Image (cartoon, rainbow, N blue to C red):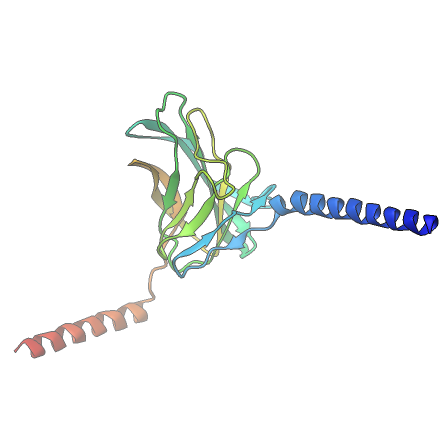
Amino acid sequence: MEMRSVTWAALFSRIRVGSLALVGLLLFAAPFAQAAPLTAVPPGFLSPVPVETDPAAGSTLIAGGTSEAFSGFGFSGVLVSSVFRGNSFGPDALTFTYRLSNDAASFNALHRMTISSFATFLSDVSTQAGGVQPTIADRSTPDVIGFSFLDGLGGQGPVRPNGQSSLMVIETNSLAFTPSTASIIDGSIAGVPSFAPLPAIPEPGTLALGVIGSLGFIGLIRRVRR
């Protein structure tokens, strides 16, 4: 009986150690998950936002990388936006990255950033380790992708004065980009120059069909009014 007691004790000890090791492995591996799709059907959202060690690995920087200043009521800071070529969607597909910094002289923390022109494009979202991690990534409309920094929900809270966000990453299947304006939100809204996918231009045939359809609809309305 004594031998059985020792055997069971040893077994439970091994199970407990193994379980702790497994939990530790999961906790270590979870932050380095791959980017996750952000559906184009609102309201799409991700929480927590997947963390990658180097989201732009193997990509080529083709634009940006410079700081653009912004200011709103009670806050100011800079946004660094960059565009990389090459991602999981293909060698010519574009990745957009954004990093917020809040000035030490700001009175308010930064709670949200949005950027537009993502409609019609597939988008995988992630963030890089380091800095304040966004609590939620969302697609409030097909066109607009946002990152929120909130207290609770397992988040690290807002980007406080003299703080910096993590690198926010949006991989897309877009093949071209255009200058855009990001919105930094905390009570008031501050616009700042940035980059976003270039909306696709309809083919001439498709455009012509759209114009003909619109003219026909207008004509129908006029006949009904008479």
